Length: 113
Image: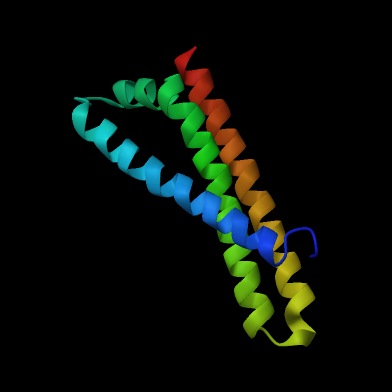
């Protein structure tokens, strides 16, 4: 737990929040400026390098942002006797989510090739 604590956790929260605050308006503008009529056009847009790479960075930073925030809430408010179990359960959930996102990216990349 000392890997990301105190000032490091704050810096990660600030960096990820800043990136996400820039990325989401960019995606909103991009989706409103493109004419998307079918799933193939949407898949082409999502797998273009201008969306896929920043999107993967946004997903990673969103996971870090959520992990640090939820970890801090659990550390501050969860009963001490349940803290290890709660943090371990949350870590397993994040690993499951990352595996599902990796599968989704593989499917999207495979769809465009």
